[in-house]
Length: 477
Image (tube, rainbow, N blue to C red; front, side, top):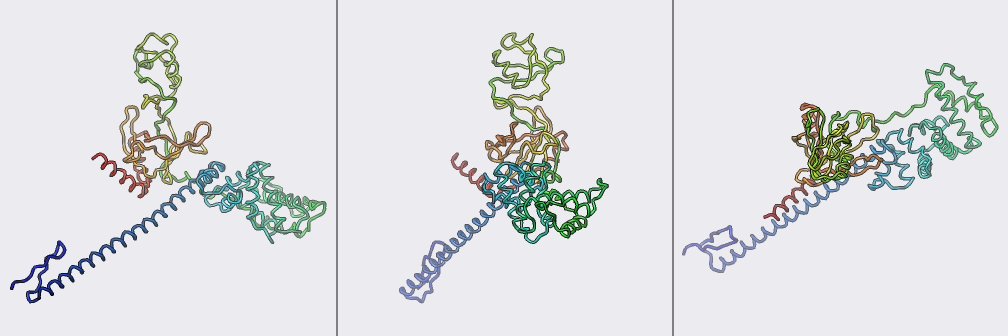
């Protein structure tokens, strides 16, 4: 009797010993089938565990991305604060990074992480009711208990930099005097005494340690200057001597900007320099505008217009910043119109909107590209975060050494950026690409190299882009 052949699941052909009875063969087949079912169940459980583990890891990475994104926004808010304190606070509030309460804002300023001490002083010194409330909340965070007046002033004046305006200084020192007397009741008869003596100490610090002051006040003169300030009475001479000696031995330390103000933000950039940026200006127009040089042989430029009327011609010239020679204003449809050359740069109308090149000072730092109208500007005209962007060389008929910033695989998507309008409003950018021209081929290569190194990628963004591309491809087929 030959061996029985039993068919198990599709991939297996098992041999059954020839000395088994039919019942035993059947039992063996059942055992082997059950084994395969168990192995399949084990594999299914492994797959489910792997899937859950992957989801947990993705959840963790999602939280990490959220934290990274939040940290980036906080850093951007700090930079905005250092450039313009009110705009920086507003940015943080709008992005749910800071509560719109005087206590929360005071805590933010008191911690001072990455904040310019001068900007803190400017914000606290404003006379708006809300700013004054923030000032008092800020002062409340200082603990002056059991400190003498010089020690308290050292602590207070280190937390920000005194502004230059007398009214701001007055409000801040008044708030300080109230807080000091609250923490140290009985030291002075009134807050006025503390206020006056605080100013006297600040003046003493300047007189003793400013090399331009030749006549240094003695302790006797300091005591004499402060007679009668304690509600008509004199302060203890020992107190005044101690304050004098403290300032003489150790001047106030004036806080330097801590490296995170605007100057230091751009102090050591990856790269900086003048570049030309292609921008849109004016309103959409209906004609094609083309510059043609030396049409009349007299060295002047002319403008050819198609499908125009006199009114349209004048409005178009206005948008271009040009004037027209009155003798040849309108000679008939299709004729060339002689123009007085404009001081503005020029280009063609692309996409129905006048485009022109603007010279801007660019600074590359912190994975962002900033551009300014002038190198002395306090605030950039625009900021282009480089996250998820790509860069490429391009040819341009008007300018050499061009390159573009763009979003890969999404040619019609607007790049996330912001710019400052002429009226001071900060608005979102509307570019799908940023075209830029460098002065030389060498500088173009250097800019491309540095920007490539600075571009950061969000893996979630890439996954989403790949999924969108896959879905789009599936739909087409």
